[in-house]
Image 1 (tube, one colour):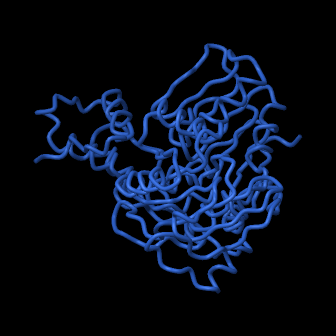
Image 2: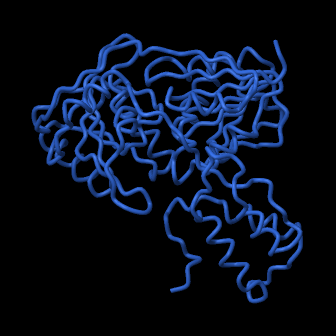
Length: 378
């Protein structure tokens, strides 16, 4: 096998891309896969430890760390991937997330800089194919077709929705309100949201997967590759708050979530419920046939930082990209936190030294799961 070869496995949801990556990783002596969700990393970890020794497998996410001394395989969220390891295989799942305006710069950094010693695999949507081509490396493209059909079924009241359905909402309040409505009318619903603790979230997934309840109420988190036994997806809303503003989901986002309906050879359907506005016929056809606009720009931030002093650190963080298909991401939370502390280093007792600044930057990157932003002055 050629050293540093790249394989890009591209196609819509339900094409077995993640399964292929897991099997490929396990065929090597060592490897790591970066996932877009903590829940997905945990799901794959649970599968792999049934196949091989517990001592060989590590799970690293922002909230769970299981790292045996002799770990050979690492399942991580993309943000938590240890980037200084030499491993035979490295895979990144949902690589089209490079275009996400909140987390895209992390995925782009992995796309540009993280490689397996023998094989690197990128899995995701075909929309990113032309960008991967621009890497100018030894890349093999594997295009995967969906194994089952996806059809639009229009609007249905919650009371008329069939079992094995996930209803998608975009706020915690909405998720709980819909779950309560489902419980009153249908008898039971599990809840899946990124903000739940790992223990609670895993228990809720199990509640649905075991058949104890027939309905799932979830945020768009389930669009990122969680393998649930779902036949239908219904949207209660097509608008979400993306950290800056309330906006309508783009077609590829709708397609990513809708594509969770129907697994393997079973056909799936998607529709709308509640006050959700109709999806027009043209958009429905594009979603059913997985035809989405190709990605032209990726979000980027310099990761080769200069920790010599506070000024150098800020300057290196603000560096501009040198390729026309890279766009500098707007100031992220970790940058805001860093600048807040560096503005008055004396009162925070921070020394202007390399080791201290490195440690401070690591601390600033700890995810703010509870969204408190306590560092902000009141």
